[in-house]
Structures are given as structure tokens and as C-alpha cells.
Image (cartoon, rainbow, N blue to C red; front, side):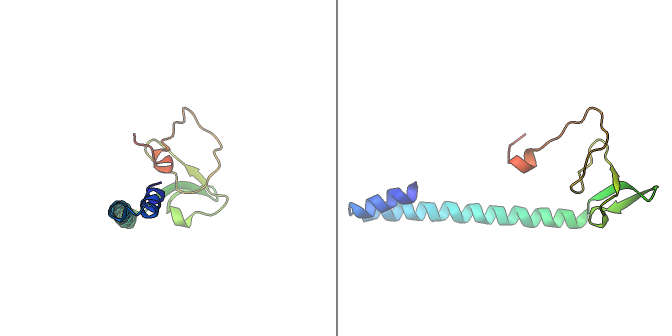
Length: 108
């Protein structure tokens, strides 16, 4: 929208306005990119410090495995506060509540 406004400013020969709008758009875009990059790096660093662990039952034996070691057929037990370690199918639950804000971008 702002770039269209800058284009109209150029068409009407208001070059100062067009330049100001373009610079503002570039600054906002650059700051957004830098913040997103830093947050991704921080999240990666946190995941490296504390890799997600899954409490699962494999071949009838209950064990704790890293989420990346899960295979199809593992039964994952999830309790209060656990992160869902992978794409799973819920077999049984009671009073399930989910916080999907990290997927949708909502603030809690």
C-alpha cells in the first residue's frame, strides 16, 4: 500500500514524498527481518540447550527418547506442561487443552 503511494508520488513528481515513503518501508522491512532472524537464532539455541524429550512406549517398554528418535508406531505419553514432540495421533485423553498461540501468532 505504501509502495503504491510512493509510486503515485513519483507520478505526481513529488519526489521527496516518494523517497521518504520508500525509505520508511525499507527501514520497517529491515528491522522486521532482523528481529525475525534473531528470534529464530535464539529459538535454535534454546532447542540445542534443551532438546525436546518424549516419554514413549516402544515395543511395550516405557522409555524417554529425544523427539528426533521417534518412529511411527511409538506411543507417546503427554502430561501437563509437555510439548508435543512430533505429529501424533491422540489415542486417549481427558480434559485436553491446547495453547496454539505459537502457531497462530496470537499473544496470550
